[in-house]
Image 1 (spheres, helix red, strand yellow):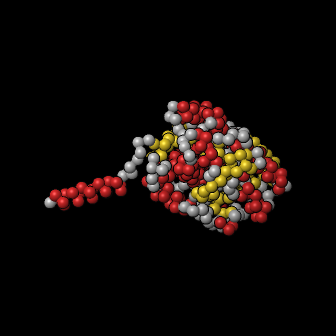
Image 2 (spheres, helix red, strand yellow):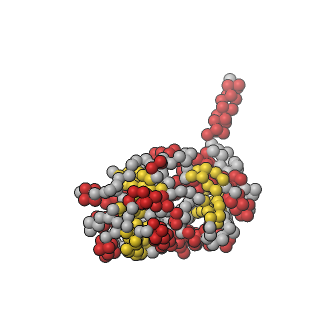
Image 3 (cartoon, helix red, strand yellow):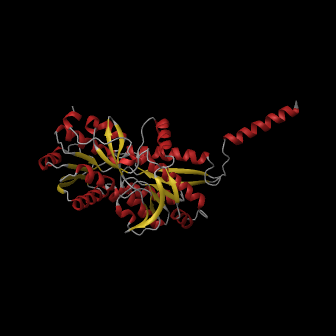
Length: 397
């Protein structure tokens, strides 16, 4: 009987050791700054969920060399001054070993300045204004493409298929929007497309019709918009109401790829194209698996913002496993030496013109079709054939 009880005790102890990770007392803390409230909260939610999904997997697989990885989330509320305060708190009070996140470009720029000043490594996963990696800040790294690259996937589609003669550019007057508008103006100049109107607006507007009336009078072949999700949906809804019918509407990523865009704009979202930085069917290891796990866990679609965050978590974990110590200089050196594959694509930080510590990846074109976002260009990676030309009266009927 005693032998039987002893055997049962050994069995029970072995089961505990299998099912519950045994962590060293110390955890490794990393600060993640995202917009969790305010007008950009939808982006923050999809990114926070993706960070947490990756965190569960990383810790279930043993964490950081036996220590538990802990992500401390802070809400920047979509305001640079709040983002700056959040970075200072994470560095000085919470003693994080590095920072991650960064959504809006203005907020990301503020965080990057604090990180560089304190010499704490900062891995950006979304903030895309070109200037962020053009400051010679050696503690600031960016996983995602800069905004100047967003339209590269669109260019060959315009040259091969649409061949527009004229374009209008509408953009939020932020660092992200202004930078994207400037780059697309240069694209049009290079391709011989005449820009008949280029005008910025303040985010959160409720009535874009005065601006859209000017667009209708200019009658461009192409309307290119750089907007976050609420503005993106309103611009398309009011364009439909005014019966503005160019050859195509194209979003510059951001708000035009989120599920909330289609939900809020309804049939006005149909057949709208958008630049994108990622799609789940791309031949990156784990891309579809990440998409399916996200949908199963959260009951909604994910897109490139989520893939950026999920991949950033794995880059952070890889960095912390390889660093010689948790001294910021050693962590920075380990981050700089990153060379790995993620669901978002390969990650390796290079110097690219004025930019330093910048990852280089291609961009793509998606189109909304029957309420689903489809990858349509380039053809060799498309999930569905593009729809063009577009009969707007039939689409909006």
